[in-house]
Length: 181
Image (tube, rainbow, N blue to C red):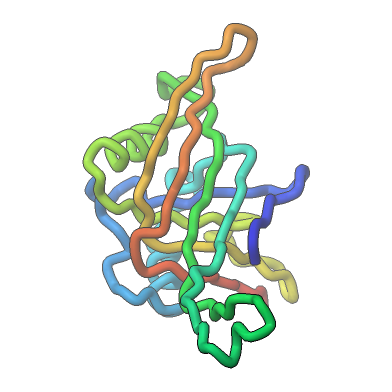
């Protein structure tokens, strides 16, 4: 998968652990299905879902290693084999400055703390809410694990303030699916 952009109209969500210490990740590496399910089970739909994200873009290009030999490159082309994947999620966050009617600001503060400390942050990027069990036969899926955060804040003259975030895979990432039963 080179790049997936969650289509408009989908309920793209980012989950995070609002109660853990800044820089706390999913802990276990490599992250297993059981570890992710346990982590998701500790989260709350009222405090651990960031509902102010937009323009979510997931990019997981492979890293290639050369497998050139004289015989393989005789036709003039190099020979490569994918050996691992890189992972990066970019998204925008609506900048909220208070915990008023527009919601809680703990997600924004966690992102700032993670970017400032260069620590890992446990995040999950799903196409729908992964904390509430999906309906029978429905599947919720997305990338989750530990990420390093980089941030850029811009203040456009004729728009709301936004925070552009890039979350780069740090450790323990996996594609996770939850199917309702």
